[in-house]
Length: 77
Image 1 (cartoon, rainbow, N blue to C red):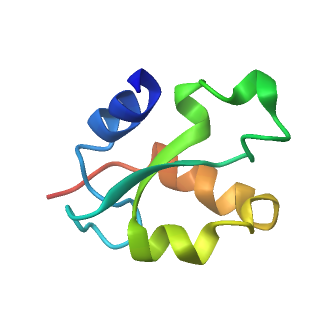
Image 2: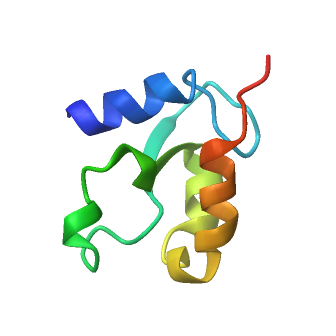
């Protein structure tokens, strides 16, 4: 999927939480089902590894501000 590839590329193929390069997933900051107009916006996605994704999945609305900050934070290393 083009959106997933674009999110991973922007984030330099590293989890934005723990910096892992394994089991990466593109996570929707604002839920896919509720925000149809944002589904394919690059700014509505960030790269998370599977374990970090499990922490945030289903809690997107409670975590929007934190996740949005992670999108704009530089990828180091």
